[in-house]
Length: 77
Image (cartoon, rainbow, N blue to C red; front, side, top):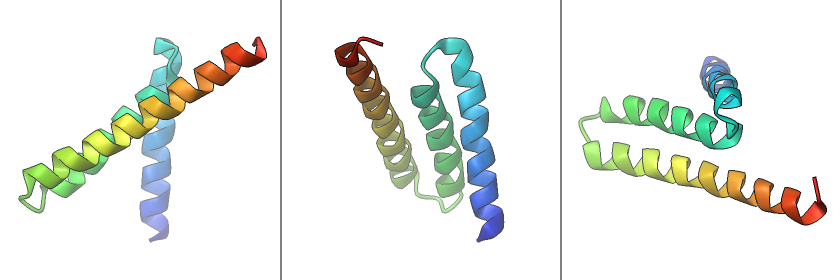
């Protein structure tokens, strides 16, 4: 379990590194993490569940990034 947490943390950090170049770090990190999760789930031969996991994680990241940007605009940052 510890190895899994470390691997998911490293994938998320890799997504953040990639996202700093696109200026949307949370959204990019969520898409990368969603793709990684989908790759793990698709190994069970269930492509619909893999797509659903990717979609939920990616959309969650997009929502969090949108909320972060909106709060930043409201606070004048």
